[in-house]
Length: 384
Image 1 (cartoon, rainbow, N blue to C red):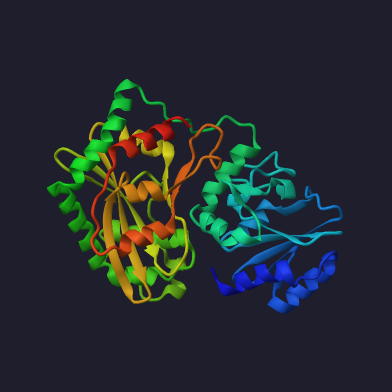
Image 2: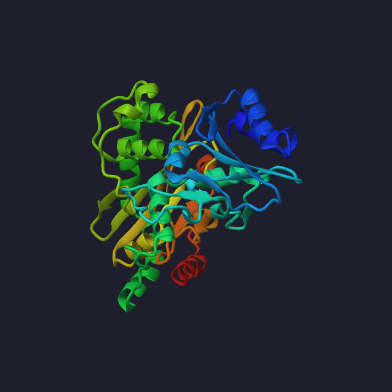
C-alpha cells in the first residue's frame, strides 16, 4: 500500500485534531494537500469523508452511493470525529458496505440512488476489525471485487426483491460427479493433457510478454487482471506500449465472468482455467471464483478446474504455474467470503496473495492434492 496512505492512517490515529470536525478537515487538507469535492477530500491515492458524533454513536448519513462510485478505485475512508473520545477511522469502499439506507427505494444496477449511513459500514469483516490496524488487509480484499459486483450485492441487500441467482443444489448424479472431480484432478495433473495445456498457456504468455509487462503497471487491479487474461486467452497480436493511455484504449471483450477464462477440451476431459496475475511487489487478495458457479461446473462428469498463476516483479516475468483448484497450497490459501453473498447464494472465494507468491517462488512446483482435505472442503461449500 502506498506510503502516503499509511502516513494518513497514522496521522488520524496520532496527530489529527480531536473533538472538532472543522479543525480536523482544515488541518488534514493542508498537510496532505487534498482537493475538496463536495463533502469528500481526496488525493490521487485516497479519499476521506469527515463525520461528527457528539456521543460516539454513528448513524449519520455519510455519502451518496453515486459519489462513492467516483472514489471506489482508491481507499475511501470515513473519519469519525467524536465529541469526547479519540477519532475513529473506517474503510468505507463498496465492499465494506452492508446496504444502502437513505432514499434508496429506486436503487437498481442501472439507477444508482440513495446514500449510506455510518451504521451501514461493516465494522467487522469476516472477523477482521475495520480499524486503523487492518486497513491494508481490508483494502486488499476490496481490490478483489469490481464496482459492478458490489453494486449488484447492495441492490439485492437494500431492495426486498427476489434474487436473480439461487444456490446450486446438485441432484444425486451431480453430487457424485462433484466429489469425483477430486480424482479427475489428480489424474489430469499427471497426464499428457496437463503438459499440453501448460505448454499452450506458456506459449501464449511468451508471445504477448511485452504487452503483459506493460499491462502489469496498471494500478486498477480489476482492469489489470482482465486485460492480462485477454492478452493470454485471445489471438491478440497488438503490442501495448504506453500504460498512460492504456485504459482509454481497452479492447472490447466478454466480461460475463464465467468460471474459467480459458476453456480447452481434451478427449476425456474439459479443462476450465482461470488466469491470476500476481504482481510480486504488491499486496492483494485476488478473487478466486463464485462458489455456486464452481460447484455447478465441477458437477459435470468430465470437468477439471485449473489456475494458471503468472508472477511478475520489477525485473519482468518471475514464473508461471498451472495448478489444480484442489492443490493443497491453494485450498489452504482460500478465503471464503460467505457474508458478502446475496441472500440466496454461497458467496465467493478469494486467495491469500502471499500464498500465491510462495507458489510462484518455489523452485520446482509439485502437485499435492489431498483427497480427504478436498472432500471436507467441498462439503463445507455445499453446507453453506
